[in-house]
Image 1 (cartoon, rainbow, N blue to C red):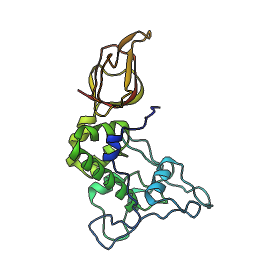
Image 2 (image 1 turned 180 degrees about the vertical axis):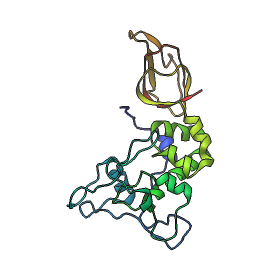
Image 3 (image 1 turned 60 degrees about the vertical axis):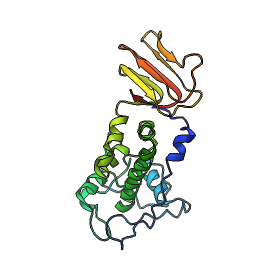
Image 4 (image 1 turned 90 degrees about the vertical axis):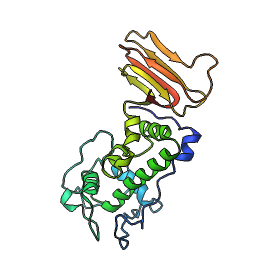
Length: 245
């Protein structure tokens, strides 16, 4: 399990938090205003917060009649999925209007049974908007946020909802967030928004240091490192994310 540190202030300013999706329209039909309502036991939660809890299996609910039979989401690379029962694809229909084929593909296996599909779609669209806003100012910052996991379901959102942001995913491919990584891929990497205390170390199977930094006197938030072939461990602290150079 990787551990993400607090992201730098510069990136925090660019990455606007997810808006409350309750009451937002989820499609081209201006008359549709569905969203999942918070449970009675958690009245302060927004629909987006509740959705995140549903997908992570940490939501607070009131009494239930018992387990609900149905398909269970399987892990998908590059995205988060609910840990409990999800709506079958045949039940992925909005209250009014219809979802596009791409929207249906994004929603497939992603919608908890207790959540309105339109709310899940709104969160995916918000992720696309955050990527676009950040990339407009700094493409590297957007790619670093994807690598660090600060943009929820970025891979699936871009693939199905905003394919025009594919260059951001391409820039993030092969990157590493802060944390400890076994058998890192050999190559050259760079930071995009490192903190002043950024440090890193690459070692072999015997624990011998192969690379490390920063160099004495180094300053700024841009660093580079080369992971040599045969590296067994890469540890990054305070660097936020590393992109392929």
